[in-house]
Length: 123
Image 1 (cartoon, rainbow, N blue to C red):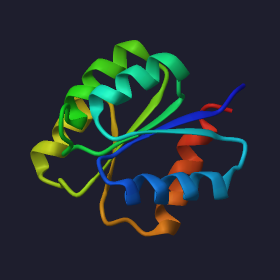
Image 2: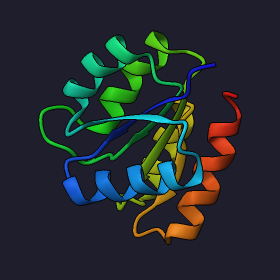
Image 3: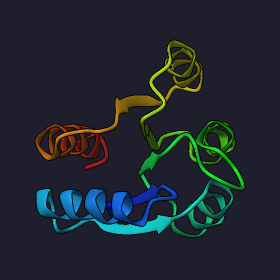
Image 4: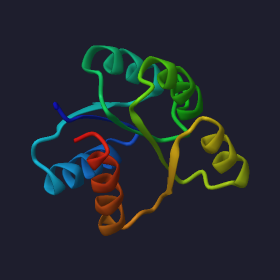
């Protein structure tokens, strides 16, 4: 099975860090990046990722709206919010959308473990 990940964050540094961590854990991943939710929708349709990491607070389309549109498009994909928006309402919304949640800042070790776990769901 082809392993494809999509990393969606308006911070280029965050995208690069997460991409590097994922590839260090398993170099067989094909990783794509998007800077907002609207861009992510197009990339998801084109590349059909099995793992999608989303920031919540982004311009154009936030992570909540993107996840709501991605879930029916890719029902078996693992979606993960990686965000500094740690309010209880954000966590509740993530649960409603069936999206895992990790709070920023996150240590590389924790990110690597989480991505490996969620990525192994699609092997």
